[in-house]
Image (cartoon, rainbow, N blue to C red; front, top):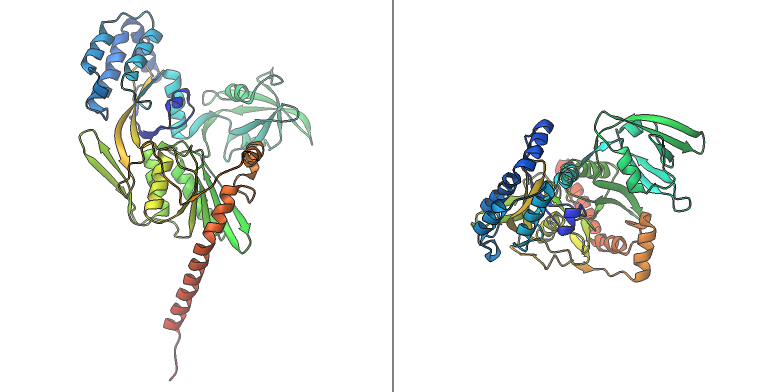
Length: 443
């Protein structure tokens, strides 16, 4: 799996990667045996990781590090625990001075694979803390989830999870208790204003986490399809297609695509989504350490050619920048906001035999115009700066994002207006021409 990662904070699961991922074929029992083997022979997993870096890392000189000597040091050291071996590997990788080439212990690797797959094991509810009472409240049950099937509603308050009161729990703690292995049960005690307290037993399932949120906004004479993409997971292209098609069915005559704070994700997802907006032209080029290039282009499968504005900021990174760069260089969209993050590297993610994992930078990428955005980012067509008051208002009231009270969105509406008018006039002219060609004319 090819991944694009925003920063080393990803190691703490603070962001997504732009990735190509190898799939583990190990069964849980095999992983367990491998983990036991690591206690007896920690060097085996360290050498496995070293070999992956040695054959695929983007810099053949390994940042002027003697990579063979690194292997010797790793394998000659005695380790008292897996954690000690892991720490040695982390130290070795830091010699490359590449924040995107990193080791993940089994727990971190499992979380990453769940994140990039766009799935988790749970009951399918979004939670938040009530600002007045601090109680845990259901924001919404996800479509086709156990929570929706059981009739949970927005506003339901969760009083207890498996008999444990939520009175002093954070949202994160409540979420961790609700998640669990597929097929297991969790008992929730809830309270609803209309019915009082009640209990529900839910079977945990694999849940596709929405990465795309969309709505149709009536803006004067225009109907604007607003789409917010939060990450590039394996489910993102399907969700994006559904959003575009639904908004077209609802009569959208322009789109705003919001990529603000989107840290990236899967390389293939960014390519697939680009093809939904661009009918022809280049999307991105990757170059590996031997100078071999791979070009990705549109394939005549665009879903719409309606006017489009893209919103970005300094936290729009990697896969977000691939999509933005493709739209900008192909003159397909107006880009509005702030300079993007500036990450032009591709990682490959590999499972290791003990259940841990390794992300390795394997290539650089360039926008269709051949631009290297590394550490520079993409400059928007129109820059938007927020005052402290505006930043605070959007932070305290996130429901204002993507509305007229959001300066980025307001600028997008103004910028789209000429394109929508031109598109409308072109459509009218085309319709008149078609009528003239099919209507009989007398002499």
